[in-house]
Image (cartoon, rainbow, N blue to C red; front, side):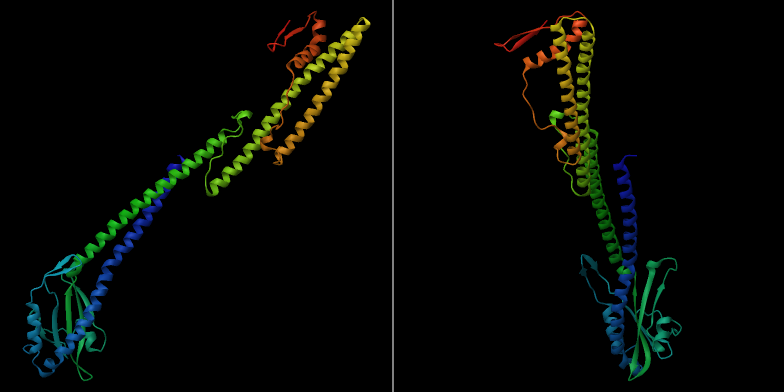
Length: 378
């Protein structure tokens, strides 16, 4: 499996896991948060209404007093409120009041009047001077049918003479919960898509730069000495450090190859003077005229001097290699060029090979044409 595919696969797996848990946490927190805010407002409402109902409950006319009339008028109101783009067209509070024994004395929905609510959590805890609240499902298996009940004590002086409970169905705020969950889901999917796009871009960028470095490394030894070292790819960060390290390694390798080629060429050059000295020595062993002996003896001396020069050049190349390895010579290349005479070079070559040619009865010579710069061999 390629590096890019592995990076993308790992990124999508991690991104998907993170997105799943984040969206799950947000979705799981929306409904409790809405209920908490709803309960907080109902606490305030219950306590205000408990103060308004205290006089009528103490006077024994809670079911037909001013408080009951005002609550009934509240239930008959028409309303059309736009709440952050959502329409509310009904008033949903149910209000009931019990006496000190927990018997319902007033119910705005007229469904529980006269019933004993002393065992219900909201009434029982409030009568004991504690905070009373409960959530009861109308359909046991459906949490959306829950109704939240929040109670407050009705006081006469310091005595609890009853309990006022405010009830509100959770379904009345479910539309807000659904909208919030929908927005969270949409935002999460958008974030997931954006992060995936960023992951793809970063992966492609990383793979592209790595491939550039790979091509740069694969070109080691391919470029000719005249062309110099291939251009190092410009990449940032740790990849840039890697590229510079590869460039240093490449310069050393290519410089060493360049020096090795020269050493190989010099070694090959050693064969010619050695062969010439050997041929001249063989000729000197035979009975030759004095002039030929002098000429071939001179060839031995000349070729010996040439061997000395080649050995010295090899030592210089060794020094150049050490300078290249220490970074003092760019690329390990010779930086100085010299002009040589083609005529002298040809004459030297003919003189070097004349002993071998004489042994084989081959005559060597050259003629030059200075006007055109041409020459011929025979």
